[in-house]
Amino acid sequence: MPTSVALIRPGTPADLPAALALIQELAIYERAPDAVVTTVETMTRDGFGPNRVFEFLVAEQQADGALLGIALYFPAYSTWKGRMLYLEDLVVTEAARGQGIGQLLFDAVVAEARRQGACRLRWQVLDWNAPAIRFYERQAAALDPEWLNGTLELR
Image 1 (tube, one colour):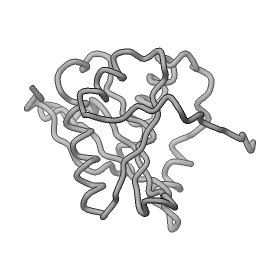
Image 2 (tube, helix red, strand yellow):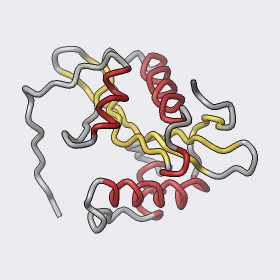
Image 3 (cartoon, rainbow, N blue to C red):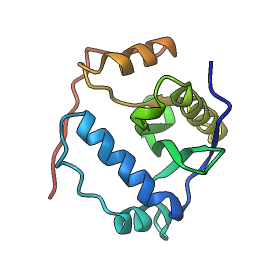
Image 4 (cartoon, one colour):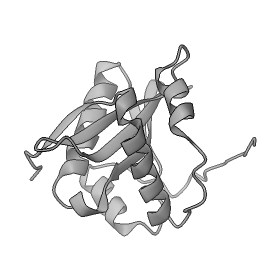
């Protein structure tokens, strides 16, 4: 059952340092601690500048305003289905996991996708991340083993 100690709201520039710390925590969990090159400055430009490329929601602890989690997403397009959202990261700080905060964030992203008229929400999950896989299976999500992810690094 989701917790009532977390407030879900849109992220602001003031949230970026704590959001980046959560992203770095996720990178450590995903066994890639040195992979994060994003900075608060690049996130400010890309999330709040004239050419915004992402949005994010935060789960804020009501008692003290601490960030417990984030869901970062951006618009995408399916040539077969039309408008969709891509959920880049859904992360809850380790100390707050198991309290329903991830569910609150996921539900808020689904609601935002519907509000934007999206037909689909997409994301990736590592094949060894059993807790995340169980979470997404509880959402009645299709985890498709047929498609391979392709990445071309441009830096």
